[in-house]
Length: 187
Ligand code: 5GP
Picture (tube, rainbow, N blue to C red):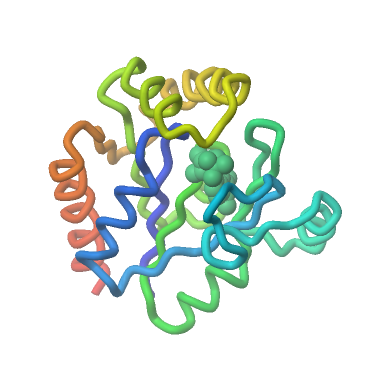
């Protein structure tokens, strides 16, 4: 049974960069493409970064039970499509989910065998600097994401595996060790 890895933690903590770097080292890992109702940012592509859905489409698909988990984040909906997960697992690939904390909690109940890893910032200040610095959100949204981040940081203790994203190189090495060890013990 291929493994499912849930990478969670507050927005701006660097989950995306960590996962990208990890996948360069472990190309066998596949990333499930999430669905969202937020609008694409510059450079984001339909089906690659996200499946961008309307509120109506998302709602219908949620009602049909097409999501393994879904949550509202910063006024938008995000979810993991069952089809994304099953297609990859069916092909024998370990799968990575990059999701926020409420979704990770749902996966803990529905897929208890999934390995959950919380990515933490070295400090709250660093998180603010990163969220402001990446320039993808307007100031109001940054504040909203930081408020959510405080609650998400408080959830850190729920996770057996915590990776502090201070130096990227160190954080990726730790993440890789966790993933390789889980794959090794399930083989
Ligand atoms: P962003 O808008 O910055 O792309 O994502 C906002 C937050 O939603 C991030 O913490 C991201 O990890 C999370 N997210 C992305 N996809 C999913 C998903 O499928 N499910 C859940 N629960 N969260 C997601």
